[in-house]
Amino acid sequence: MITQEWVQPGNGEHRTFPGASDIQDAAGHTLVTSYAVLRPDGEWSVMMVKKDQWNAHPVQLVFGDEKSKKDRNFAGPLSVVTFGSQQYQWHSNIKGGMADPDGPPARSTITPTARTLFTLPKASVTVVRRKPSTDSAK
Image 1 (cartoon, rainbow, N blue to C red):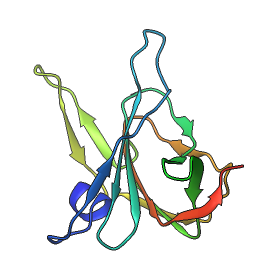
Image 2 (tube, rainbow, N blue to C red):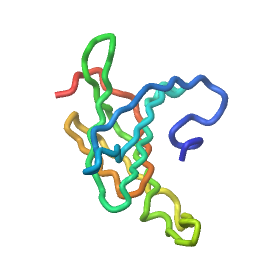
Image 3 (cartoon, one colour):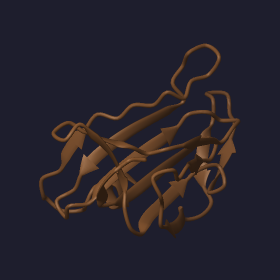
Image 4 (cartoon, helix red, strand yellow):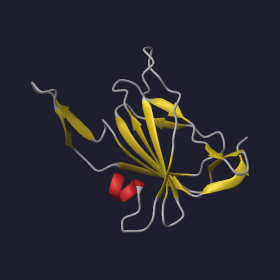
């Protein structure tokens, strides 16, 4: 997921940017961690790690453009790749357990709007990739 989906394979320059999430549990723990990268091919790629093992959560992706002070969203067909509890089986043991991959990541292509919500499955890693729009978020 990281070396084949989130970043572009090869030795091109990748620029990383901070990500943030306001999804928390009752104790204040952040349940989604995000990592944004501008790949050498010009695509933005966002990897979201969903730490909640029990619930799916909807998220909206917004890019904060520091230069223009406008928010931006993804534009055009969008690649979504998820590896979560539907793609692996958890095996408990005395040391806590381990995941045993059971299948390939789930893949889809969507065309989002400024209001599109992405549902992150429980206990998953999701990579969303595409060029952002030049229109501000609505």
